[in-house]
Image (cartoon, rainbow, N blue to C red; front, top):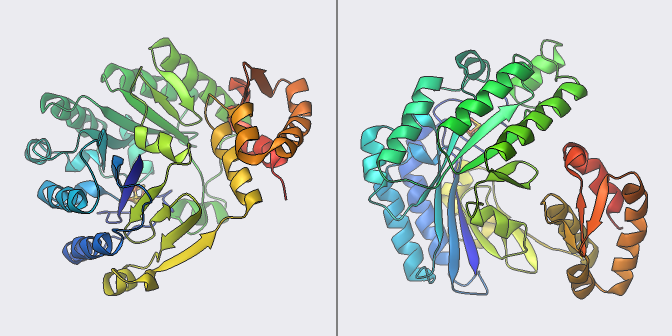
Length: 374
Ligand code: SF4
C-alpha cells in the first residue's frame, strides 16, 4: 500500500542549521492549503494502487496550520484514494505550537502520530540553534499530548553540537527517555551552505566537532536507547517495539508515494517527480503539470538507490531479494565489492542479509558509495 507525504513549508522563525525548503511568510498559509487541494485533485491518478497505508505532514512546521485544515485535507484524500486501511497519520510539530487548545483540537482529527522537533533539552543549546521553544515547553508539550491521548510520539534530537559536550548529550538522552515517547530520531548536526551556521563556518566562527566526539556521541546514543528498550532500526531512528515509523519505512522499501506541496517528491514505482520549490510559482500553478520535474530512473540508479536505502537500515541488503530484483550479475558485483568491507568488519553478513556493523553506521555514506555501480 502506498503513502502520501504533504509538505507544509511555513516556519515562524528559521533555525541556524536549516536547509529544508521553508518559508517564514505565514500570510501564504491559507492560499497554500487551497493549492494543496488543487494538486490533490490533479494527482488522483498518480499512484498505481488506490489503497493508502500512511500519510505524513512534514515541513517546515505543519503545526503552524489549524488542525481543522488537516481534517479537510484528509477527508479530501479519502475521496481521491482509499484511506479505509490507513494505519498511521503523522504530523510534525514544534513544541511551542502544541498548546492545550491546539492538541485538544488535533485529537479530534484522524492524526494519530506526532513527530515533535525538540532537538535538545538544554535551553542554551536551543538558543544556539535559534529554536523558539525552551526545554520546559518541550516537556510540557509532550506531557499535554500524552494527556490528550497521543500514544505514538516521536521526538527529534540533534547531537554533534559545537556548544555541547558528551556529558550534556547523555543528559539529553536520559531526559528524552524519561518523557515516555515511543520513537526517537537523532541527527548529527550538519553545517550546510546557505544557512546561518554555514555563514558562521565560512567566517571561521563555527567549526564542526571532532570526528572522535561524533563517534563517542553516536556510541552513547545507541547505548542509552538500547538499554531503554529502543531498537536501532535505521541510522538515525530508534523505536520501541512495533513503533517504527511506518511511513519512513516505506521509503526504504520502494513503496510508491505521492508527495503534495512545494518541493515535495513523489515516486510511482518507476519514476520520480518533484514539485517546484518556489512558493509563488507553486501557489500560481498548482494543479497543473507545469510545477513538476520528472526523472525516469535507469536500472543502475534504481540499483544504487536500493543499496543506499537498504544499507541505512539494520536489516541491510537481503541478498536473495537483490538477486530477484536486479539479477545474478548484480549480486555477484555486490558480493565482490562488499568483500574488503566484510574483511575489515565494517560490513557483516548474517542469514542472507548484508548490513553495516553498528560501529560503522556513522561512516555509512563512505561505505555505501564504494558499493555503487555506474
Ligand atoms: S522549524 Fe524545521 S523546517 Fe523550520 S526552520 Fe527550523 S529546522 Fe527548518
